[in-house]
Amino acid sequence: MDLLKKLWRKYRHFTFILVIVALNLMFNWLKVTVAPRYQMASEIDNSIPFLKGFVIPYLLWFVYIIAVLMYLGLKSQKEFRQLSTFIIAGQIISMVIYFLFPNGQNLKPAIMSNDIFSRMILTIYRNHTFTYAAPSIHVLYSLAAHIGLGRYKPFSKIKLLPVLSFLFILTAVLSTLFIKQHSVKDVFFGVLLSAVLYFIIYKDKPEKGNLASMNPV
Image (cartoon, rainbow, N blue to C red; front, side, top):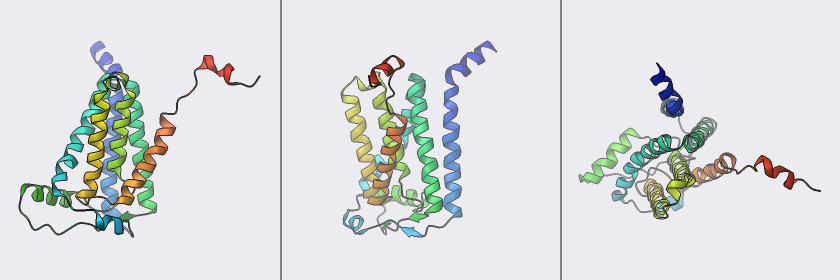
């Protein structure tokens, strides 16, 4: 029993993942319950080429998100809790927006080829609908994970790692445009929501000892 108590105290913050899973189940329910009424695609999206090779970073994104959650969960409770709060708050806000402003996009191209990339994309299209696109959950999770890693000092001290992380999330976000899973508006509102959440969750608070120095004389 003592061992179980120790494990619970050490790893109970991982219960945040259960909340994230529950929210994604609710999200999937919402997608089949409320039909989209507003299209987010624009002329800019029509000028973006369809590049099926970008399905690789799109799929690797799932590995990246899981790896970041596990890494921070094992290394830093504080950073893991902030990252989880970022994701949970962002997803709840997004789902409220989807419910009040049900939106989607109709950019899916006709895929006639039978190569491996085409088959991967067709599988994604079958399993991921084009409803509830803005703000992009893909962008939200990407920025949340990258920011969470960047705030963890042992990771950020190795200068190359934050750069590689940023390049990957940039490629992953662009992949949603190149394989036509998201529109430019979806990405924009995903970035905007993430920026608001960043300033709320990671806003530096003054230490108690410095409060007096902030008061006017």
